Image 1 (tube, one colour):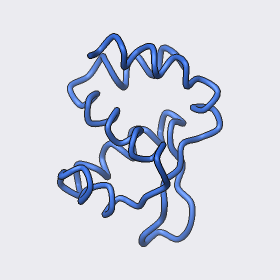
Image 2: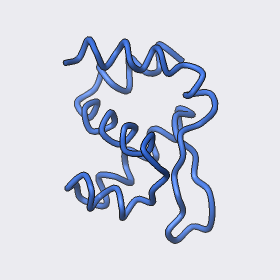
Image 3: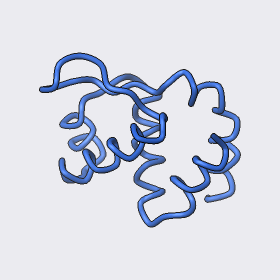
Image 4: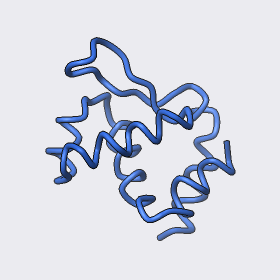
Length: 91
C-alpha cells in the first residue's frame, strides 16, 4: 500500500487533489457532489479521483449509485502512517 500511496499522492499531477479528498473523507463520509462543492472542484474531476482511489483500495462507496457516500477503506486506515509520512514530505 505504501507504494500505491506514493504513486497516487506524489507520482502524478493530481496527487494534491487526492490528498484533499482523502482529508475530507477522513473528517466524515461524503458523496461526490458534496466533495465537489466543499473542495471547489468540478464534479467530474472529483469522480475521476474517487474512481482512481477506489481502484487502488483507498476509498469505497456505500449506498445506492445516486448520492452514494464514500468512505476510507480499512486497508487505507491500516496504512495511515504511510499516508501522513508521504503528505508531510509533499509539504
